[in-house]
Image 1 (cartoon, rainbow, N blue to C red):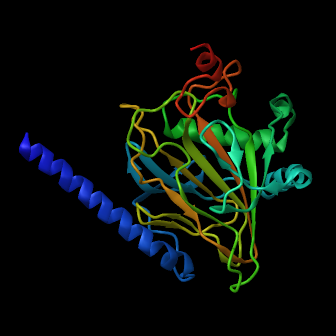
Image 2 (cartoon, rainbow, N blue to C red):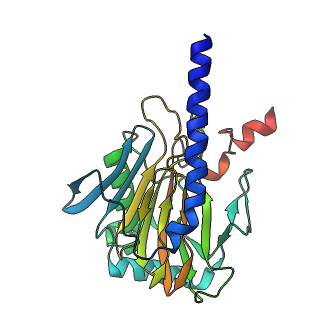
Image 3 (cartoon, rainbow, N blue to C red):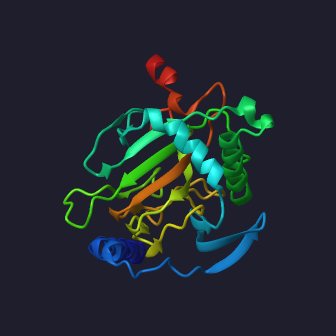
Length: 282
């Protein structure tokens, strides 16, 4: 027993060293414009598109997919977002959101009109591709019903002297504590790049030492759940959006949830995986 305790203490110590080093390197890697996307462990293809596998752990997967979306799909999302753009917020842990210094950008939630999919609606076409890829990687047969809206997010560069640039500080999209999954919560993300900045704007997975330089019309997919054990990632998919220094970064993001449907949409669950209606009755 004493040996096991010591082993666990050593593992915890090494993990703390890793995260502390990653934190110290964060600003350096974001500032290094010569740093390209991390070399992939392997590559494969999906529907003729090149997929680079950066990490392939049971509870931590990070992929990049080239030519994931098209120019006309980007234009359709931007057009839908333009009249409703507002300051970006972060989740507050109780189903709502609030402004935070950790995130500076503009955003707009885009409702997908699935009834127009059969007519070739561009946003529905893009969203269907998102769920197709998620189901290609994960064995959950995720459906669109009850999911969050697509999110258009825009970052604007104001030069190297800006002391409060548009960025997103290190964070996890879902739980990243190695605990069991909570129903109705996020378990995967896909970020799609419509416009890339001249300087800055990389996505940094600091605990995995993965650096993704944005590429127009490409996407970054990452999941943070082990489908076999249903345990969450323990920090390898924590990520940040490096400051945008010059130009604009326009992305489309889909956060994907497990355990939602038409009658139990994403906003009917709290972060503990309990439906608000059930919590009120307890």
